[in-house]
Image 1: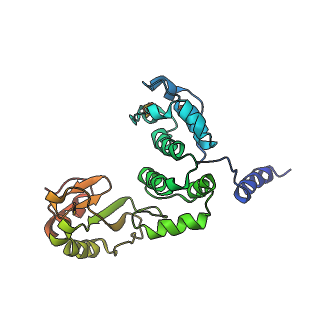
Image 2 (image 1 turned 30 degrees about the vertical axis):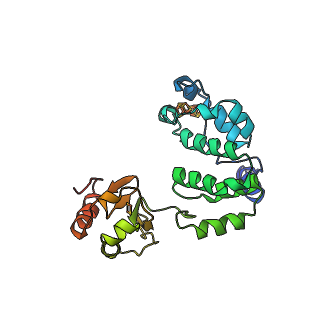
Image 3 (image 1 turned 180 degrees about the vertical axis):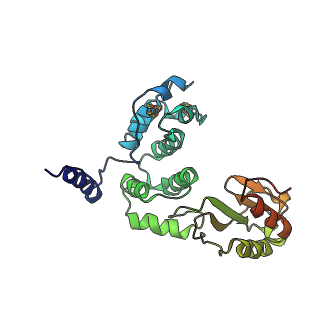
Length: 241
Ligand code: SF4
Ligand code: SF4
Ligand code: FES
């Protein structure tokens, strides 16, 4: 008997007809309960995760998801490296809006801030949850420059184009960076190392012009510093001073 056939048909079935209840991705939880033991708030992250996966937002609330303070200890201790706190953040905002369509933008922003972009499977779960056509979410995501439907490169470079940065030389910095990285704004390098974007004011105008690389902020940038920054970040992330 062909032992592979049942396995293939299982996956085929899942591809053809994804479960309505599945809100987020599968994860390899092994039920070790370590996340429960480390949580100071007395929460049971793997149970909350299960609730979120199955769309039981009311239960998530009942189990105290709002108590989670994002400390990340459960994620650190999880032997399967499940990013629990990211899912819990998403669960919090989903339970807050509880199916209300007005939550679309905040939910998408939360999803993106945790996963770096809007993964396709999660977009379709959110579409079902909010009872919106998936196409509508894609149009919204394409309209807002800050939302991405594809994963960014390993180093997501954003050049601030707020007023203070603009008048302090952001357009020249953009040209310099495009030349150095060999990509235009909005593009990702073929080796998936860099994505170059612009961003509205990042909130530190006194340091204009500003560039961010992932979660690091680099201020008072000029052509020389841009050169040094990308030379240094080839080996390690360091502020070029
Ligand atoms: S991130 Fe939340 S659930 Fe995890 S240990 Fe901290 S408080 Fe508990
Ligand atoms: S620590 Fe990780 S693997 Fe263990 S129960 Fe929690 S989520 Fe599951
Ligand atoms: S305009 Fe760039 S940080 Fe404010």
